[in-house]
Length: 278
Ligand SMILES: [Zn+2]
Image (cartoon, rainbow, N blue to C red; front, side):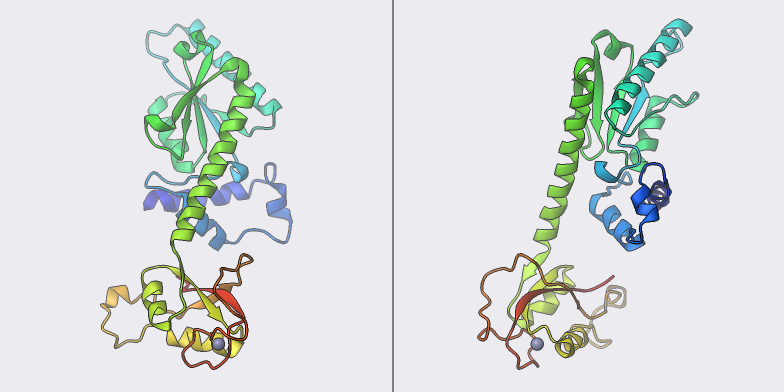
């Protein structure tokens, strides 16, 4: 958990960078810490943050590898020069790239450092890669060999761009899938609170009146005496309406379907999404 907390501060630093994301810091819209929190929870893993490529301050990090005590000064300088050239190629196609040429740190230490910060794509480049005219790629969002690949240097810019697009899409699809699986369509009030208790958000037919919304909030709040152990009682707030989804599910007949609140005599107007705030 500590790495995640550390990650959040890194991210805030990232959003504060006027040079890479001017709109976020100068427009009045901005991003709330809540939005950032949701992103950390949605895409983060036990190694820290995973920042989607579109909003990442650094989309790509290049880490030199394969330098040992036996590597000559000449070979080392040559490798670093080639890495600078790779960096230039990517910058020329508007990819936000950084080459980590810090001395005194092992590649493994650098991998870990950039992973924690959530940089979506790492390129490794060493003497073997140079000889084979390729870079080794490692995706932040997929652990182990499955997330590794290579890109020929002749196709570097397009290869990296395509891979970043794929990462962006995969992160979105995974988050969307996870959101969908935690969204329950409910028409019976008795199923509503148990579904909320299982950390779902609920789509219910609702009359869209404010009075009824307040009642639902009241009715779905956990009471002191409902037998729930004290440590599980924390999310005891009542459910609030989150939105009226643009894509309305089927099954609601206007003027016929009842509002889900058992104390409400209105007919339902729309499917409305309710959830507890944490
Ligand atoms: Zn109602």
